[in-house]
Image 1 (cartoon, rainbow, N blue to C red):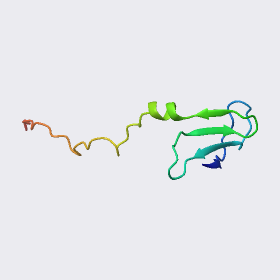
Image 2: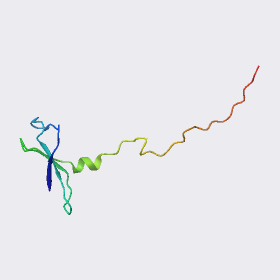
Image 3: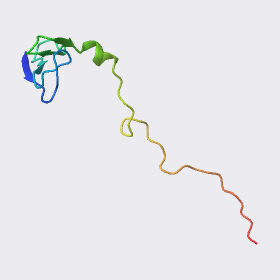
Image 4: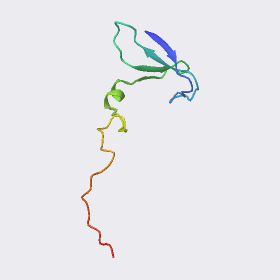
Amino acid sequence: MKKRFIAGVVCPKCGAADSVRTHIAEAGEEDHQVRDCVECGYEESLAGYLKSKQELPTRVNQAAKPAVEEVEPQVLKVL
């Protein structure tokens, strides 16, 4: 398992900057998404968070809508 530091992240327990690292699974290993702090030993599992997280709706992942809405023609009176 590779361990990489996450730039700019502050530990939620001790507040130390740039001390949080993530565990990256290599080929053939089970991916269980863990982050930890090297200063205070705080550890956080992201498995439950990532499963409950839903993708935000954007124009890219939504069904295509017609560019022009069809409207019924109206009769105009010219004076």
